[in-house]
Image 1 (tube, rainbow, N blue to C red):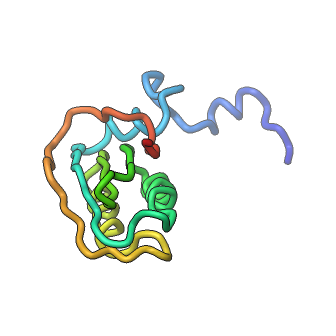
Image 2: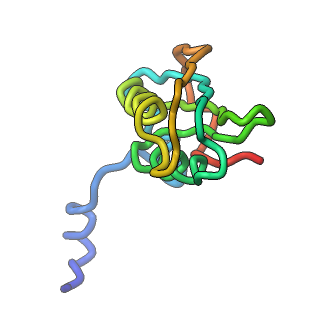
Image 3: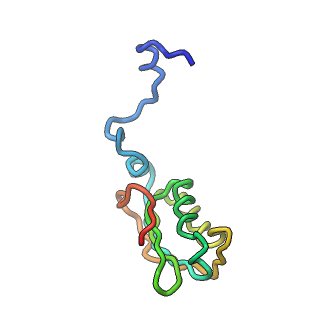
Length: 127
């Protein structure tokens, strides 16, 4: 690949507002469309089947932030935040797909609300 002359590189570079530089996914999402937050609890065979790892991977693929963790009662719980369409995609995944070895009996969603900014910068597994 041939490097562009400095002037050409400046013209070809995508224009990113300075306020977004260095702030990543969370910043980019917070300036786009309305954001929502929702808590969830997944019931079924969801522990010991890599459910949390697959949830983290799917959330990052979809482009939402939040967290996931196992509970002492054998469920998986967490929170998802992002643009409504992406959160809805994650809700569908949590209700119908899960990890390959999981069995989802039901998923409860609660505390769904519009938020002005994301409370997390990524999606993580909590212990």
